[in-house]
Structure formats: C-alpha cells, structure tokens
Image 1 (tube, rainbow, N blue to C red):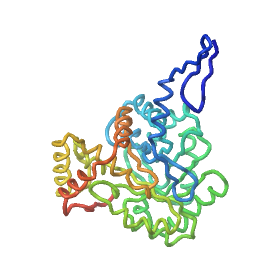
Image 2 (image 1 turned 90 degrees about the vertical axis):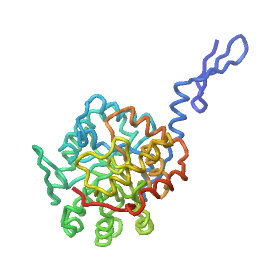
Image 3 (image 1 turned 120 degrees about the vertical axis):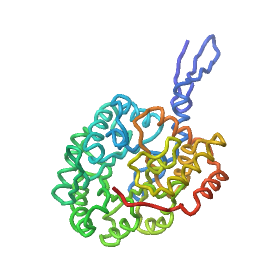
Image 4 (image 1 turned 180 degrees about the vertical axis):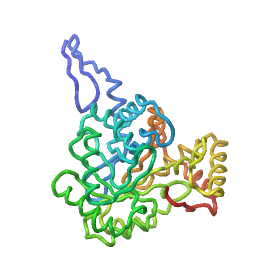
Length: 347
C-alpha cells in the first residue's frame, strides 16, 4: 500500500491492490475553502495584501465590557484560522490591556501569518485617559508596544485620533518621528487615524508625499453613514490605502442596541433601532447586513471589527461569505432617512 498527500489538491492518494483510491482530507479541505472565501486587497501602495475583514483588538482591553481573557485569546486564533491576516490594536485600548492580551496570543502565532498595526498618541493610566503626540513619546511608545506584543517589528504604526492633537504638531513632529523609525526599519509603514475625515485630509495636505501611507477611519462606511466614499478619490490620488472600522457603528447597528456611553444623537439611535426591527422582521440580522455592506467596496482595503468572543468571529466570517441583499440595504437606508451621515464628536 502506498500513501501520497497531494499539497495542491486536498486528498490522500492510496495505492491498494493496484488501484488508486482517493480519500478527501475533510478538515484540510474545509480550512482551505474558508481561506479561499476571504477576499484580499492591498492597502494603498504598501505591499500589504490584507483580508477584507480584519481583527480589531480593542475588545481585548475590555473597552466595551469585561472579557474572559482565555476567550479573547481564542478569538485571535479563530480570526487567523478564518483567513484574517491584519490585526489592529492601540496602547489606549484598555490602557495597555489590549496590547498585553494580544501579545499573549501572538506568542503562539507564526509572525509571517499576520500584519500588525498599532498606534501612538493616546494612552491612559488608572482609568484616566491621556494624550501625548510629542516625538519623544511616540518613539518610546513604539518600543513599549513591541515589548507588550512580543514582536520586534510593527508593520503599520499610526498616529491615533488626530483630532485630539494639534494637527500642526502631528504634521511637523509626530509623523516625522515615525517616518524616521520607518527609515530605520523599526516599522514598515506609517498612517493616521481619526473619526473626522477632514482632519485626515488636512494632515496629508500638510506633509510631504509618501509620509502618510494609510488612513484608518471609523463609523463612516456602514449602513447609517457612507461619508467615506466622498474621500476615496482624494486618498487614491495620493496613493494612500483606506482602512475602515466599526461596521456596526459602535453598536448602533445591532439587536443589542447602543451602550450607555454611545455619543450618537437620540434621533439617530431611534432610526437605527427601527432599521434593526425591520431586518429582524425579515429574519435577517442587521449585524449580518452591516458586515456584508462594509466589506462590499473593493476600494476599501479592509474593514476592522472587534470582539473577544470566538463565536462572533465565526459568525462575521460566515456573514460575508454570503451575497449582500441590496434591496434590504436600500430599505434600511430609507428607514434611517435624514439621519444618514449624522455623526458626533469623538470621545
């Protein structure tokens, strides 16, 4: 009897009594099919080809509610096994807790199986938020993050939530410090993040070409707000890659509803709840529709979602494997009506 495992086609070839018998390797096949179902796009001109749905690690810091650390770590494993290869975090999330928990997971994951993005500028200690966009603190933060994450290279370093900074300082001090780290090979690429798209554009306009390689924006490409599309031509003209985050608009687009701290105005909260009930009546969870919509635009490299629950990771992956119901998208957006694109101040 002769055994041969074909690495290109997932089956085991067995020679038995002069005959060839094919035995499917089901577990391998299922994993390969899962990976093939995920779409991948390059972030701008960085060379990083990332999954259309990616893992945001803010939940690992207990940002939204208390977590079970073991489940949080398992969520990271599940994301990687599902074909996600981009992970985003920040020292601000959980005031260093998210990076610490993520670091425990990354110790057991091959470094060449993911791109890692983290940030500088926003921090916290003893329950108090702090901000420091100085060059000195930015450089210190990069090395501190690498230590917490148990890595020796950061693929993408971002200036976090630039609306809290003096934009001139971001352009003339913070970003040059990060570019110097890029030139030294400590980090691979440099980006900026913010809720306000206008701030992202201002900083790009006031820095040399190539300084900013990526932008991360949240709550502006989802069922209740697609303002990001108005800026895609601009970002593309600059060769800048776009990362979308918060496809559920920080809980607005969920059956559970918004947490008490959510800054959205009441009329928007009510409109989204009506949209949720409409989807529920059609036995189509609004979370599913929101995920499908957020990954539907190929001009957006990836969409980040966050969870510390492995089952939520699996659910979201299964959602995007199905085609989006565009008629239902139109119905939801009609229900949200004049609350479309209503935003709020970051906090």
